[in-house]
Length: 86
Length: 354
Image (cartoon, rainbow over all chains, first blue to last red; front, side, top):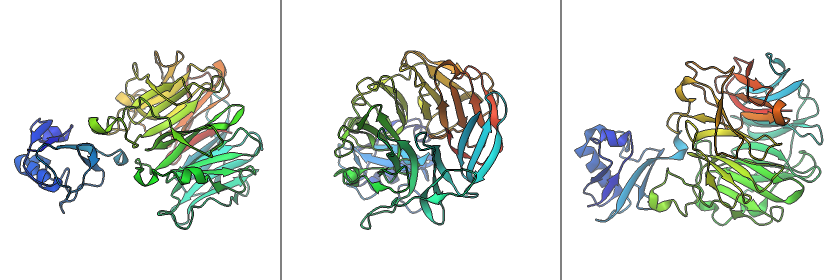
């Protein structure tokens, strides 16, 4: 399954996990699965419309990902605050 | 007497005074308009200001009397086929040849003037960089904020952009190349760090008496270069944080740098509620906090990238910085002691000694 890597404060909202294996075939599906398993994350990465928040970057391995970016079994998703956000 | 040009969210304030005592506001220009940057070119004696009207867009103005009339400079615009318009002008820097000035702005653009700032033209070679479609902005936009000339050699210039790293030319801007080796962008995934273009430089300066020596404040990192910006070495050990925006060098000492650390990108305030400038005199091997006279209790200030400047050199060097709180602080002894130069100004964007 794809692996999602999180940093604080998101990792704290995800039960202290900095790395999670989650199901899904797109970035959006994986992040929705993260919200289902760890409801505390809800609203922090995806907004009310299911879009990635403006100042959050989700990388699939080394490339910028979007909600509809395909994700494979061996991919790593990195959820990082964007430098544009502060 | 020292004259400070303080660009704020609500106009340009000209402050005058002697180090050690509060300064007087002697004039205000561009009332109500965001002034990103203002400076005086010591060669022409002309004052220049970059103003970003929320209504009318970014402009540069010039004058021979900052309390008098300002004239608009011409030519600061992007080509008609540009994807986005000119957003903001972040810095104006005298070049090494007569009457020549550089201006840096967003989205990652370099302008040049050859008549002391009256008219400007886009540096086409930089505008036409083939990787431009891949460039990413920082929080302030894709701002070219640092332009480091090489004393005595007009052909050699280094630029820095948030967040497109360092660029070097050795042919007066006809060609450009990267100078990013060993920068460590920890805001990127590990596997993308080595060759990413998204390098968020916050400030960069060259030591004038030893031009190969440069210093950089990064978005999480403080660095030194000993090869004119080709490669960089971390010098952040000893600082309370490696995050911050502005930086000043003592022009007489190539081993010197002053930074003002903030907690982190997620908390851009002075650490522990104390306002401290950190000084190195050994090229970053060690850092000394300089806070005597600065607020040391419950002071959570934000100092922006152009809001710190030096005046003169050596033991009597002046240092001045302003915060978004509207306070301006100064030192007349190279940071050993500090005084409050002004309070209750609008949020300070930039400070330069005229």
